[in-house]
Length: 176
Image (cartoon, rainbow, N blue to C red):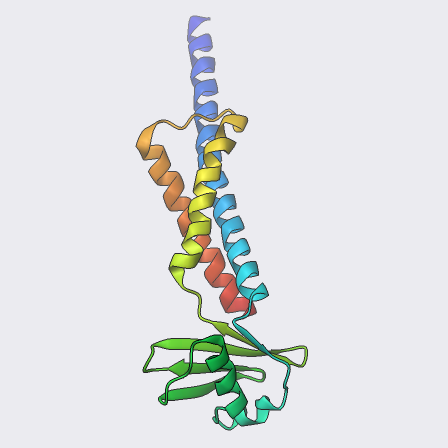
């Protein structure tokens, strides 16, 4: 009888440890995915420049930088250098590579407008992933999950940042 009780207690303890480990894996995954989605939505909803002139498309297709596009960059405060290349990526997508200033811009035609995006910089987006790690500190007590020491936080931080990176990268590759 005592053996059965010990065996039952052992199984319950294993089950509780399994559930806690599952929470410590799935919660960072979800928060990392959420951080990736938030970063992607911010990136897509805030273009660097917007041109309502659809006539630039022909020049861009021919690898020519239109004068009014150069003026738009100067107005924005980041003029293009003399050494730039335009690469056509698809029907309505081009890359402007400013080799002298080491900047790359993505031009996408969306709803008869040309939206110009600067390439994402990791230090801007990593902050959102770090905030998601901090938010988890307040989530775990609601889930009755104990976080014991630095080892758990290192694991949670790694999983969140890893999932953020994967989701953000995949969304950029698929939809951009």
